[in-house]
Each structure stands twice: as C-alpha cells, then as structure tokens.
Image 1 (cartoon, rainbow over the protein chains, first blue to last red):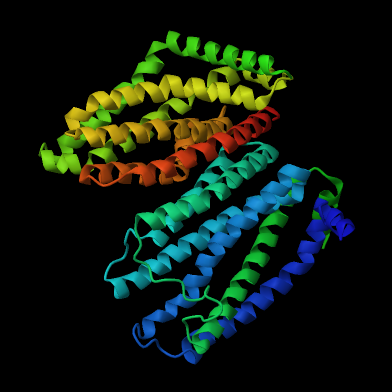
Image 2: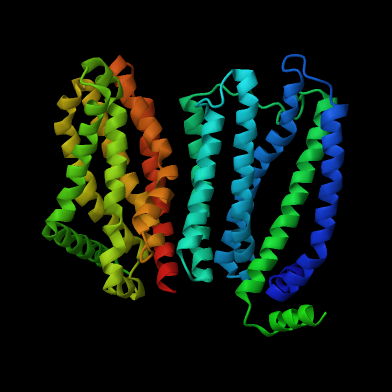
Length: 248
Length: 228
C-alpha cells in the first residue's frame, strides 16, 4: 500500500494514472446522471406537501453535500502537501477550490429557487443557508489567496494553512449560526435508521449523489493534470509528452 | 531552552514592537478615528431616534471594531518583512511560538486595547444602558484578542502580496463571524435583562482555542512565505 502511494506521489505517475482514470469516472458519472435524473423526474412520486417542486432536491442536496466534502478533500490534500511536501497533493488541493466553490454556489442557487415557492422568499437568514454562504466566502478567500501569490509552491502551501484553519472553524461557524437562527427543514437523510424520506424518493437521490462524486473525481483529475503539466513544464517527461502530442 | 530565556525573548520582542508602535503615532490613531467615523455614519443614515439606535448599537460597535482591526492587521508583519528583520527572527533558534505570541500581544495592546477604551467612551453616544455597556466591554475584552490572533494568520499569509489589505479582509471576515454572533447576542440579551454568561463562556472558549492553535498557524505561514 505504502509503495503504491509513494509511486503515485510522483507527478509523472500520477499524471499517467489520472489520464487513464478520467474517462472511467467521467462516463460512469454521465450514466449515473442519466439514471438519476430519469429517476428524479419519472420514478420518484410527487411530494404530498411540496408537489412537483420538491424535485430540485436531486440537485440541491447532492451539491450541498459535495460543497462540504470538497472542502475536506481540499484541506486533506493540503495537509498531505504540508506534511510530505508532495507536489501532487498541492495540485489536487488547488484544483478542488473552484469546484468546491461551484458546488457551494449551485447549492445556494438551487436552494434559493426552491425557497421562493416553498417559503415565499428567495433568501432567508437561516442557519444552514448562512453557513453555506460563509463556506462560499471561505472558498473565495482561498481562491483569492492562490491568485495573489505568484509562486505555485508557496501559494499551495499558504492555501493549505488557510484551508486547515477553515476546517477548525467550520464546526464553530456552523453551530454558532444554528444557535443564532434556524428555519430550514431538518435533515431528511442523515437519520439513517429511519430516514423521513420515502424509499422511492431516496434511491434517485443516492444515485445523484454518487454521480456528483464521480463527476467531481473526473473534474479534479482533469484540473490536477493541467496543474501538474504547468508546474512541471520544464521537466523532461512533460516535454516528451508535448512533443508526442504535437507529432501525433 | 530555559524558562528565563523564553520570557526574555518574549519581553524583548514585545517591548520592541510596543516602542515602534508608540513612536508611529499616526498608525496608532488613524484606526481609532476611522472607528469613530464609521459609528457616526449610522445615526446619520438611520436617523437620530434613540430607540432605533439603541437596538442596533451593539451591532454597529462590533462591525466597526472588526473593520478597524482589519485596517491595523496589515502592519503586524509588514515592516519587519520588508526590512528583513522578520527573516532573522524566524531563522533564530528561539521558539517560534513565543515570537509569534509576543508580536500578537503587542498588536492587541496597540490596536485592541485603545479600541476598547474608545468604545467605553462612545457608549453614551449610542444610548447604551450601563449593564449593556458593561457586557459590551466584556465581549470586546474576549473578542479583540481573537481578532488579533486570526488577523495574524491572514497577515502572515499575505505579507508582501499586492493589495494585501483587501485580501486580508477576505480571509479574516468569514473566520470571525462566530465572534460577531456571540458578542452581539450577549449585548442584546443584556439589554433585555437576560443572563449573558453562556455567550461569554463561548467567547472565552473561542479565545482559548485561538490562543492555542493560531500561533502555530501563524508561525508556519511565516515560514512558508519567507521560504519563497
């Protein structure tokens, strides 16, 4: 296991592995998106209270889950980069930020669209909405820091510290905001023993969640590959790669 | 290292920073003037009615304090970074934790404490009752050190970067929102005559957490930025 990890900590091997894995993740994401969306629109019954408009849950909830998961991946990769000083983890951490910010924005935007018919307003200063908004600010701060520091290595390591500080802070922000105000409906899925969602509604949601994860994996690999090629542009294997691409 | 040497290092850096701060008077006074000006803008824009002002005055004071402390945080490492003395301090064999703590304490004494005194003087202008003002004082006493500690992380990460002041604000503000929530709700409760110990305990807990972890983050941030 350790040997395997150290092998793929080398930018070249990681690049080649990522190159091979991307289509698998990408296509399985596409298939699951198709299945999940079909299930979301035709298989799941309409909600007894919210009618058809509840169907936005199939985008809203997976993107909200992803917004938090991606931050954890970003901070984890950043920590790995700080500890083992691996270039690959720096590239992964940097690639996570725009994706995470997009998922967070998507969760906020779909939530807003859902809020209008249900709560009668585009936005409420509710605990979960507010902590999601603050999460978006954390992502934007990370991206701003990345673009302000010219040196890639330094930018990645400085970003890792910021992400770790954010990880310590996220629970505090989350609970302080809950304490401050809440209106959002309680979680429907996390009560695993007796979820308060019907099984026919739950299955498409889980399919969509897996599809989101696979999509994220494919995108993060593509972005990390670009990061690595840019970072290693003076190394021999990248030069050979470019020559190969050009001659083909 | 013996305890005496650590204390020695701590006090040397603390007094050096305090001396530099006191000699540079405009940097000391300008944030306070800014603070008063921000506070003045609210009665002008909301209207001078006592009841309306009283209701939002804790929020005004806290937001103004956060903005003012954001202005001062830029200076915490900047001049030492530019003239190279920060690099020498980091390279020295002394404990980085002590070094960073001394610099942060100096910043709090120069920026946080004058701000607290200013708030006590500004309280009557905002029609805060005595008990609420007292609570506001406690929240600031517990909260402004956290502003310095978290600000120092952002200051360390962004030193030497173009338009670092703006960037620092973007990094700091999301992290200190819990502080704002607990402080303002404590003062609001005080105005209603409700107990405020819960919020003050939360603020104290945040302070202890920041005191324990922030210096480590600041020191690693400094090392990373100086290794460029």
